[in-house]
Length: 71
Length: 367
Image (cartoon, rainbow over all chains, first blue to last red):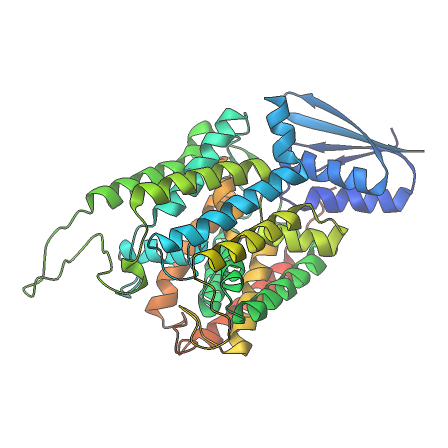
């Protein structure tokens, strides 16, 4: 995993902005975003669907790890 | 449960939440709430501020059960779906004053974003000016967000801290039910501590139980679907996403049809209920609100639903709005149907300066 974004505790829409920025920065590849609210997860899921990134979601002890991939 | 979660997260989920608000807000008006004010978070918090004696504008004092229901409905949803997460500590004082000035802006326009939508659905074209201002304010907020603006991270808090605001709502409900009076003046006027308008908008309300049940449902649905007027406009501008917007369109379309059915649709600019036609201050009032909402991360309704989830920062924003309402009337900043209050324009400018200062200075390395 090349990059990690820790967006825990940040209010909406900052997790989306950080993810969007990273997507544009690297264009393709993979990175990980850590969030702690369902809203942030849903917003990033929609962003990923919309911009053609694959998404894996893992939930562990209150944190949600989103792995985004684009070939 | 999973299916339900997926439905609420879907486009149809948010559209149904919007339709629910759009159907029941005009009905609340039909059943007694003030005109084009079936639901208005700003106006209703202002009425609560008045009922608690934080301002003495005799026409707008009532403990609106809708606000109570929004928070408690969201609390129930958050508990049921395991999303009750007490948290806080993200620039509380800034959030308080963002709430404060968001309320000033809303009371210069005379409505929160939801009421702007309901006014539009009722034919009040001044709402178009207000909504344009709202979008412009949000756009400024987005520029700050894009350049690294942040109020910082919130952190986990104790379970009790997440319950404080919902408990305050329960206390408000008790005050509404029992309306204690500590005395009367020699003329027989109640001296408080709870004041209810005898005439004017504050005296107009749907039956308590009806308002409360509808508001509980709205709170529940909105918590699940994340319905947010500010977020709707923001997501369209920022990431070209129309998910939240579809909820807002649901409100407008349903409310428009309901207003036609109920004979509440009166198109025009002038003589609109609890509104004025000063375009400049309708616009700038909502620029201030939109900017404050964008900087705080949610419209006033959304802040209440987040408060129900245990978000102490949102609860502080909501408290700032209620205190702001007290000041808005005591300091002649709120508008009336005659136009902006004497100090309305000055307070909007002060609010804009505050928000710009927040936007420019609140930047920190969070990565």
